[in-house]
Image (tube, rainbow, N blue to C red; front, side):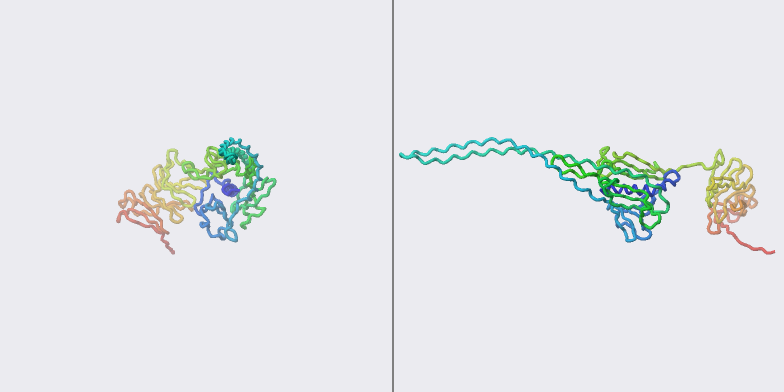
Amino acid sequence: MRKEVIAPLLVLLMLVAAGGYMLMNNDGTGSNTLDDEDDQIGEWDVYYVDSGSDLPACGSATLGRLYYVADTAGFETCTSAGWAFVDLTGPAGPAGADGAQGPAGADGAQGPAGTDGADGVNGTDGDGDDGAQGAAGVNGTDGLDGANGQDGEDGEDGSSGSPGPPGVDGLDAMDGHSALAVTSTEPSGSNCADGGLKIEVGLDDNNDGSLQASEVDQTQYVCDGADGANGTAGVNGTNGSASQNTMLTSISAPTLQACSSGGRIVQQGLDNGDGGGTAQNGVLESGEMDYTTTYCSNFVVTCIADINSGSGFANDITVMGTRLYFEATDGSSGLELWAHETTNASTWQVADIRSGSVSGYANYITVMGTRLYFEAEDGSSGLELWVHEPADGSTWMVSNFCHPDQGCSWGTYITNMVAVGNRLYFDADDPIRRTELHVVEIEHTITYN
């Protein structure tokens, strides 16, 4: 059994067994963001490394993990005895029987007869006696051999082996357990007529690093092809080969333009050479792809609060716990301090600092401790430092050190606030030093009567 065929199939089984639960418990958009750490495949305990030297130390942190090693196209798993190679190669099929002897070629045609040799020269007559016998003439040259008969035609290749049965859907993965795979030789029988490889997959329910029989959730058989038929013209019949009905799978990532929050593209097809591809080469080529499934996640923008049908102007948004605080207007109260609770999607006006339709503002909102500090005005003191206590919903002015009576017609102008511990630093304008760096800190006093 070819490793390059088995490896993608095992990866698919891992994804099905360990990823089903994640897909079922997602928010419905199919988001599965890959972790950069260890080149993990998906979000499960199957990892990818380029070579054996990239494997991490085998210990309690990696016990039971399965790693796909690219340069050997195989899998390594961490056991109590160290790293162990997961052998996915099935036994070789028996050699096909010799084909019957092809018929002998026909005899070549008879070559032309050689020419007769020239007659010998007569001897000179002797005086009264017969002359000696002349030498025999030279034999004519033998005719050329006839051409050899043509060889018999090669016998036809044996038929392809039957494909293994399709695998059943994997069970939903359980949170907190590793996915394990065990391979073993499958003898000839009802599961594989000519034998093959048995792959058992399941979750390590008791987290002991081994797959017990009670933990097997799915069994898949990768069957050997049947022996090829005997040749018909003197050549051996070929062994059964990888079937054109072998299903291959390719996994890739879509573009962020197509899926703005990431996703997966799963493409499948038969290794049959469709679309100009090469049949039975163990590679899923573009013309051989029959099915494509895309799991896509996209960012979705939704209006969560329509504070004012004519624009609420939510700005200066600040996070405190599970709430968002910001400045907004409902169209009748002017710009004031508002809040949105993310746990129940409720939105309300926190304080109407300046009553009526004129704005009280809530600028430069800053969190310090359990309180919110911001710049606002009540209509008589100008822009000053204010505070809101979420625990009891109270809101009050912290300081009024540059009010209109002191020549500050618009107040202190609190800007650029930064909280450091229990101190609040900001830029402000006072009647003596004008615009300079200021600080507010909490001072504790005790009064006795």
